[in-house]
Length: 356
Image 1: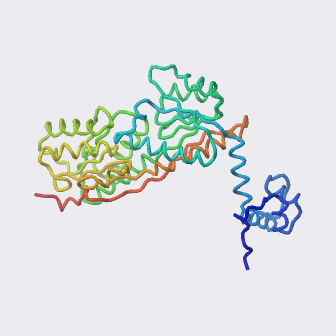
Image 2: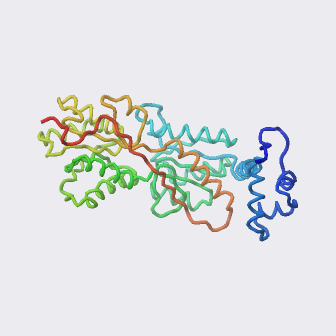
Image 3: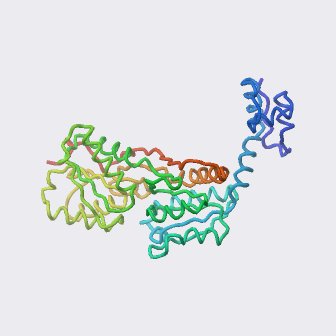
């Protein structure tokens, strides 16, 4: 019969209780948990099972995290700070990070990233606030990442890409997700597809890469890949870009679908299509990328790539804690890509279902 867990009893659990549960000496428990001596697999498994069942492993891990990380500088670009429909991605990430910091007792020191500020301003702010870690959101300027990497302050970039691998990073699997999205459109019979994007962070470029990869993988000539570049990522930018493109190509250049690099662009593009008397998805299927909540409320509801934005903060903290615990030990920068899922709704249809 399995032993009843002592978690939640309120009693103090330590190595002595683990040793009693596992039937080994306290010194053996210490060796297993600290890796300080060779222990047989059978005994090691028994000790870890007892420590896990008693809740000792979880408390030990939490204590280690708190010891290595107590205060972080949260650096966020100015354009991501306003709480509005335009910034749903940034605010979803921030909410997830804030909740995790609260749960771990980690204090957040906010810092606004300004484009006209010296690139070492973040490092100076971290030192002034006595932060033992930096979390940077969205901003992947090479000079900024280089300055942070040279500071020796543990740092993680969220929703950005560091090709030189100066610091750790957490990002969606942008290229693979865009490939998945485009291949889904192709499976529905779409061959000439518009990719509505903007010139922004390196991560946005990865979505374009994945879009083009799909044409290569499916043996479809890249001449059928139509790239339309908006001025930015906001819905109005998507509206403006789609309006201009349709004015230039009233016949839609033979395109049957639009894959947008952000949900915001998709919202704007659909608004422009409706204003011009075109019906989604009968005249043109539209797919987004982000998975923000507004997509389900759109008319028609938006098919999109869902990014697990709520998981970015906890994942970044884990990387930051590992870096902080490593101290001066050599540790290669880690790039963590989170998997994305396709959410199919009414804004996309098979080519055969299009209105003639």
